[in-house]
Picture 1 (tube, helix red, strand yellow):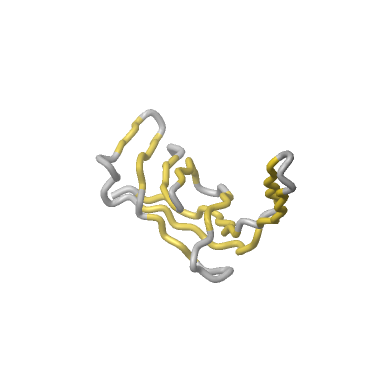
Picture 2 (picture 1 turned 90 degrees about the horizontal axis):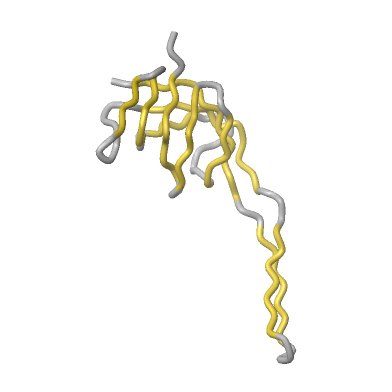
Length: 107
């Protein structure tokens, strides 16, 4: 059996995935335990065979299960101007969706 890899695009980023992988993507509108289907597939790798899209591979999909929705660790954003008494501190937690890839299909 050939191992399938796929390059998917979601949230403006690209991820190389295979079946069983767990990835963290930008927040999706899917509840915990739900399924999600990615149809923006850029490339598919089947053993030594490679299929590149122009710009997308037609008929290819990647299905996954939403493990959880959450927020990443807090980062501190600190701005200041020296000698001007200007200081601003702000925290940020980026929301994410944790997905387990179940199946890669190529038509």
